[in-house]
Image 1 (spheres, rainbow, N blue to C red):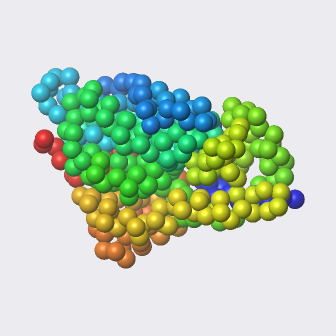
Image 2: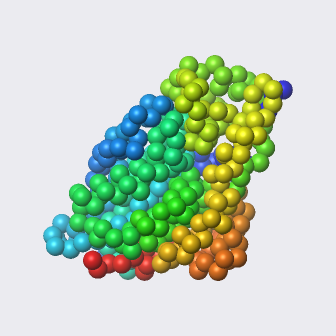
Image 3: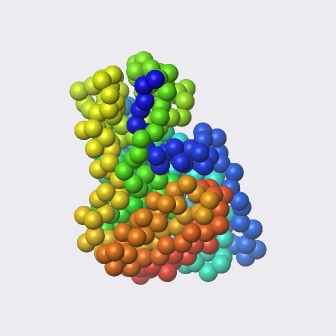
Length: 353
């Protein structure tokens, strides 16, 4: 039997049940009796950074924008913005359902968090997710978030267009995105929250059956991957993001195995995209943040990597918080978003222009 190299983080997350195509059931915080309604808008944001991608991913993408209760009645008021990144296999709209938006946003404000705008950009691809990375194959989703989405929101809403008034948060693959983009773009964001980030460590060997590998090799286009089993699709998503190859149609990517065996040069590209592999080069950037938070459930298979990131920041004396809370990868994410994430940004973003 032939074997494939699969990121351990994806295997662990799959085992935890997070990366399913159906909506994940999560615990719902109780309704706050004094909560005021927030307006929810679904907008289309053009991605100049995504144009011309080889995978055929759409450059025009939905985003969910949650406006605070006072937005309509206070036309001269400007607000900080929190950008919230979704996980693998789901898009922005589905993640808002899983974390019970707008209820949790309204609840956070009712419990004392200062009002701000929350934006959920979309990064779902043919294989389930872009990993918020730069790739000729999928498109440059890193620049899409930090430039195209931010510029759209600043030009269409009453924001405070300053890095100290922008926060970045993500869960699972979105937690990876928050770590990656946060380490690379302190000129855009002023506070950072990493929720159960996947893929923080360089991957370890995992097995993919010969049948799954044969199914990958038989694909004629990315659209043909719709019915592939999870391990095969996850491998394709990783390769499309981290080992693109414009010279290899029809999928335009390199897998870290061929008939002759493992391809270490491809595996090295994958490893180079692990935040724990490049955190040492991001120390000066991380010091620019007003505040950094990391959290993970005590029953989450990604707990070990979160602790490694905590240790890395401690070694460099980078001020941050790290919490292991009671829960699985997904069970209490809505509680965390309401009671910890939004209050964190309420306390650490600048609210005056």
